[in-house]
Image 1 (spheres, rainbow, N blue to C red):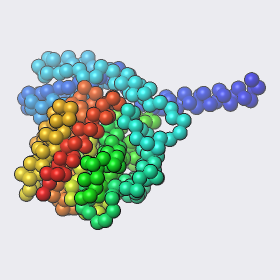
Image 2 (cartoon, rainbow, N blue to C red):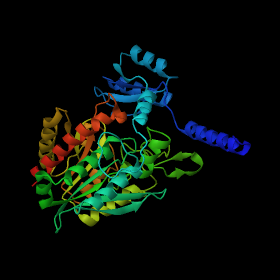
Image 3 (cartoon, rainbow, N blue to C red):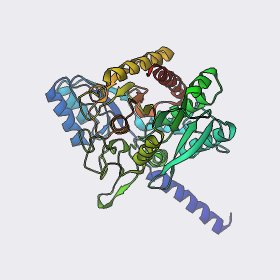
Amino acid sequence: MEAHTMRAAVLLLLGLAALASAATTFHGYRVVSVTPSTSAQVKLVKFLIKRHGLEEWTHTLKPRVSMDLMVPPSSFRAVLKTLYKHHVPVTIKINNVQALIDEQMKQHRVLDALPRSFDHTRYHRLNEIYSILDGVETDSELVTTYVAGTTYEGRDIRVAKVSSGGSKEVIWIDCGIHAREWVSPATCLYILDQLTSGSSEATRLLDSYDFHIMPSANPDGYEYTWTDNRIWRKNRVPYGSLGCHGTDPNRNFDSDFGGPGTSNSPCSDIYHGPSAFSEKESQAIRDSVISHNPKMFFTLHSYSQLWMTPYGYTHNLPANYNEQYRVAGVGVDALTAVHGTRFVYGNIADVIYMAAGGSSDWAYDSAGIQYAFALELRDTGNYGFLLPPDQILPTGEETFAGIVAAIDAAK
């Protein structure tokens, strides 16, 4: 090998090594589930979260409700010792977060070309998702796509419109507003696959409705989970001298903006942003929803297996809560019938936690959509955000069945 060629190869290897080392890793990190039974124990868990910088995988923090926390190896013994000392029940759910991440990345095989058809056995990067949308657009007269907005980093926020023609009521479904929740965009692709399958069920649905599906509502954050930090939640807008990035787009809607379950700190995972609708992602959902006036609104998250109605910012119930609760129950029953997966349903504040600035609350209050649902898909914490690819297909199957049943049940 000539000297200049060898130097180039060495520089290339060094560059690749530097890129790899830049990614955030979680070797030895564990995910534990804690269940404080008293207010004093809740305060203790809050103290541990702050003292040891624990990552909250689920944010529910009230007596007799479990909460999942990611614990760094440097703090693991101290955290468990304190929990045991104060008799707080704790279960280790994931023993090595990075091992699960590595396995998931290994399963994402290198493709010779971008996919042009659905594959529900693997997770897809953003360019692959959009390539699939392009393939559907090419292969099916039912589907057109439009750009709902452009992110801070210049990526398109795209929506697939599935229609058999004519003017019909709209069903809205968005996925992936939180970057690390990979099974959500995968489920949107499954739903799109079903609607364009030509089946009798798809034909029946499209005779009555148009579907607008946003498979990746947070493209910048989603891509960042592939390249730098698999557990990243927010978008990627930088915040000056603080060195922090990202707003939580699902705290950025004008539904009691800045209220409970949000943070003023740009370094927080639940930072609400500088003002309501300051973010490109929330703007894209707002503008698309208002312009198409959907009958029903579904936003898909993971994880916890919940089917939720407004509100998140208050324990007060919306005027049509009984009707939303009825339709949610029909959806959950149909979902469970597919694979036996159990969901809890009810209003956000009571079922999971208080959270202001959420999209489903805004859809009900401001967009006037009478059926506005937020779903938390599989699982209940055994894998959490790192749900294995072999669960993509069953998650899609049961979620689609639940959504179809809810659509049919709505008046």
